[in-house]
Length: 73
Image (cartoon, one colour):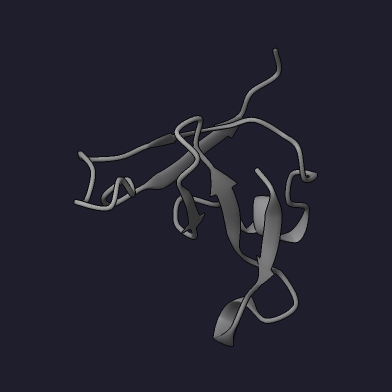
């Protein structure tokens, strides 16, 4: 995880999405799957996160990605 993006609308003042960089170098924003507590207290930049997805786009971005957890290892 390389950064945070602010929320809009009902998530104003909280986390909107995380900016992630995959091992392949692809950078994308992950904005779904977070609880309200996770949005209020997002992981620190540099954390390794786990997310689920359904394949990749032609540009190598995970399709329908959804946050699962911060890895503790």
